[in-house]
Image 1 (tube, helix red, strand yellow):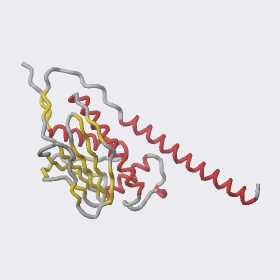
Image 2 (image 1 turned 120 degrees about the horizontal axis):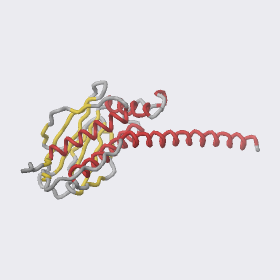
Image 3 (image 1 turned 45 degrees about the vertical axis):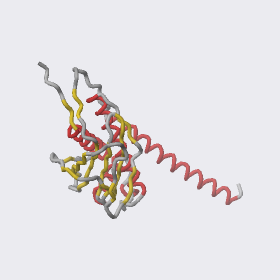
Image 4 (image 1 turned 180 degrees about the vertical axis):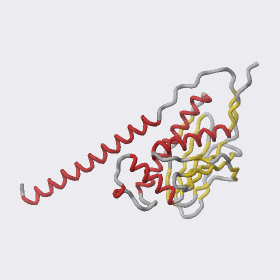
Length: 228
């Protein structure tokens, strides 16, 4: 008799953690690990120094929050940008800089995108996400799921960067189970390397275009001054 496969909320959390470690490790070209233990928490919240959150809905609903210390945020940001080919001297030095928030927000978007792909392949249900929101915070701010979930389950998992900086992922979602009725084959997984390579090319092209625009603008200004 075939054993019935059941996917629980904890299994879904594990898939989210796997997406976070895979995307951040590939994007920064440096190891990022998550803890083997998960912590039950009463509620999700944004915490100093940088907090990012995103809501998802569909087959099940939930909220993902990632809280970065300033050191963790700058390490991930700088490793990502240097992996993209940006010189270290051109990088922001403060975690409150807009480009740091933009990069971490984009990485959050990639993490949730990878996660939704895993969910669709492994349990054959679809979820959609809104645009991640990133903000610098200096005190705890409680955030909750804006849906009809009666009692969302909240969990926190710690992550460690290559230089032992800690950040935390929090997930609030409805208590749920997916029960397999019959065997099926999971679809092929999208290669994160191809996504990262395309993103690298895009950013380098944008940077090159910005430099050319500034150069052309400077030349035109000089010609104008000379009356040519």
